[in-house]
Image 1 (cartoon, helix red, strand yellow):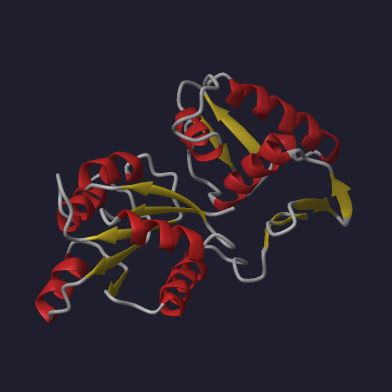
Image 2 (cartoon, rainbow, N blue to C red; image 1 turned 180 degrees about the vertical axis):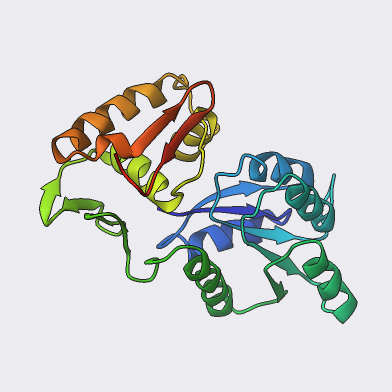
Length: 226
């Protein structure tokens, strides 16, 4: 499932956003700007909802720092400030969309889905593909040339993450934080275990070579395959 980060100091509003997007996004929360920057700079999210007026760092500062770090995750600014100057400033530092409080939940959902559709082909159809491999992200099934590929939950999530980020280097730390979560007590070595298991399941179809290991860097799914 795609990942959402909500950076909002109003904990009730943050929880509501997580709740109303739960059918298509897995959400994490941060309640001040510094915490939000820490989570967002890991570059494991598909979309971010960012409040402007927060403790520690305001939303403009967070977003400016993210773009300086080359984190290009789509950001929807959420704020009570509706002046044109505020909107211009938000877009100038790298916002992708802007929604003024109070808002209708349907509009927030619509705007987030629009951002996701723009950045993830196949999002609305609940399917993503790599060569002849097709993942249905709604019912967590995988097929290669119409033959079922049996994956457990984390194996599916791992393959989904690679297909969503083709030709991009992803580090072990990014994979761990994305799939197991920041608060997991599992060790980082679990990534190598699941990578090995995934490759074994792809090998009979000659798809295992499409995931390259970059020594001391991470992994990358190449569109050219083997």
